[in-house]
Image (cartoon, helix red, strand yellow):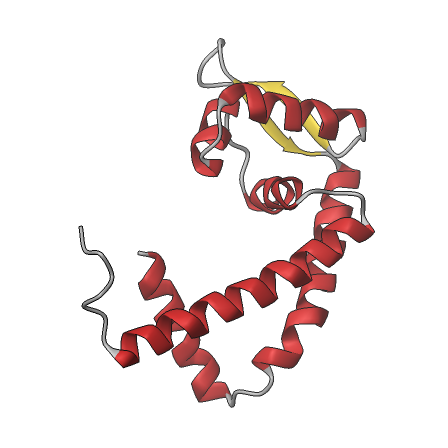
Length: 142
């Protein structure tokens, strides 16, 4: 583990830029979440469930949260009519979670609102730069 003193000025600039962009994006997501009386974690859950139907354990692992925390999140989402729990066809002991029709509508609305708020930043880049940015960001996440 390094104490951080061996970073180059370029590495510091990259770190600062990544942090600033992250803060900006988190602020935009927070604004959209608040407009729908949701937390950042609830927005994450809805966007995950938009494309997947994980088990509760799988969702907890993906979020990096304890199962009991995820259970509470899902309980609240079920009460709001956004999420369903179904028995897993693979394992009778497991429960799969998925979006309800209202949940799909809200997830789509959140995605549209986030796109409208983030697009002005991305639109500053030409199409080739946008493609390169996607490749660079995906590379960082691997």
